[in-house]
Length: 234
Image (cartoon, rainbow, N blue to C red; front, side):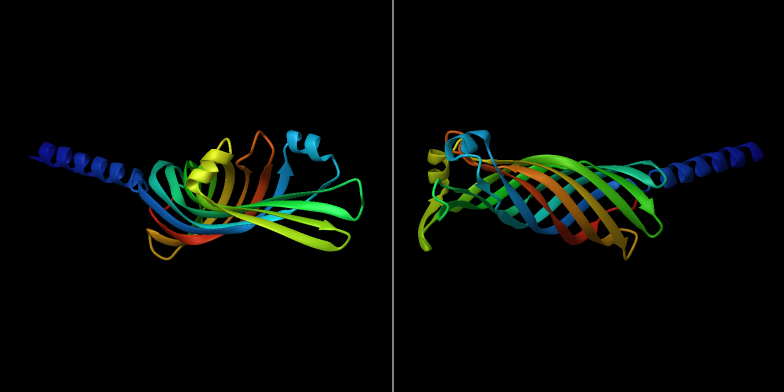
C-alpha cells in the first residue's frame, strides 16, 4: 500500500512539475497601432535619370496590425513566439530633385492603402512583472488603392498633377506591384493579469515600394507602436 501511495505521489509531482514547466506556452494575440515616419531613398536608376542632386523627403506610415501565433516556453523567463502578421497599412513615399536651373525643382509622391501579410518571430524575455520582446520579420503589403502626385516648382510657380490609382492600375503601371518590407521590433509588455497586457514598442525597417522600370523610391522606416496583448508571459 505504501509503495502504491509513493508511486502515485511520484506521478502527481511529475505531472505538476511538467505542467509548471510548460505553463508559459500557449496561444498569443496582439493588436497594434504602428505610426511613424520614413526617409525616401531613390533607386540608382532614379538618380541616374534625374541626377544626384536629390531632395530628401520624409513620408509617413500608420496602420493596424494583428499578430497571431503561438509562444513556446524554452525555460523560465524565456520564450519564442512564432507569429503571423496581417492588417491595414497606409504609406507615403516621396523623393525630389533639382534641375539645372536652381529655381526649378520637382517632387514625386506615392500614397498607398495596403493589406499587410507577413511573419514576425519574437524572442521574449521576462522582466519583473512584464516582458521584453525582440522581433525580426518581414512580408508584403498589397496596395489596394493609392495615388501618385507630382509637384513641379519653376520660378516660384507651383503646378501639381495627381492621379488616383486602383489595384489594377498599380498592377499595370508598376513592377513589382507589391511593397516588400523588413522590420525589427522592440516591445515591452506590461501585464495587468497573467495573460493580458499592454504593448509599448519601437520599430525600424525598410520598405521596397512599387517602381516603374526601376524608377522609384525605397524607404527607411522608424516609429512607435501601441497595443494590447493576450498570451502567456515568458
